[in-house]
Length: 281
Image (cartoon, rainbow, N blue to C red; front, top):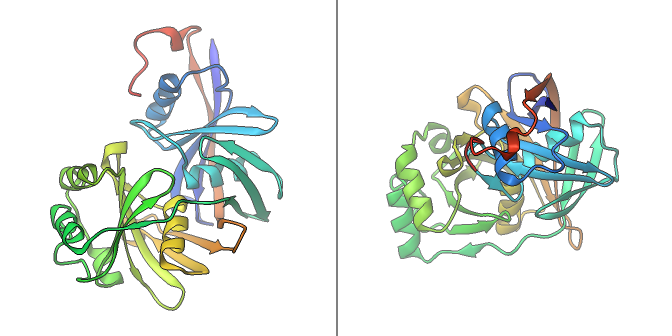
């Protein structure tokens, strides 16, 4: 029998059953990507798979595919495994340095590529194909963010437009695929130093991502903001709160609270990962 302990964590919130849920799956050393993706698909959550502890080594999986970095799953890992302040987590996106202060935890992205602004004609076309034509603020910049995976970021007319958006998953998936991106980020100012934000990633098996640390970090840099308080997905019943801070010469810090809501273990037959029936990936 092969056993994989897991922890369920609500990230970027201090209240259970809100924020963005993630799974932290331990004991994944020796598994290939397809097998780890199958574990994430079984739990139906974006997941951090723990491959080692000296240093902590992670890979990230959405239910449908691997992703190079998952901010809320990183926060979930730091919280659930009690990784100390000043520690380090190794990921496919590089080394992430850890911050923690009580129930609030975070990590530092050492650097992100600059966002690429789209020309007005291309931006308007993509926004229209994604169903954002009326909600988009005309003349505003549309960016291709590197998080490090590419995401399309579109500014809408206001926070009310962000909250009211009801996009069709198939339409969004086709539009972001045409832009060579994996997700759509929509945002609007929500007061001084504050943003309202939502993220859609149907190609990853995520109709909506309830809190997205890596996208928030890249957006902070694109906007030239030193620090942003971000609220995400209040209207979906899982409100999230996160803070991003760009420090010159020190990358971008992503911070928020996290709450452990459950623990369990997956029990699978020995050799399960060598069969042909391993799920998506």
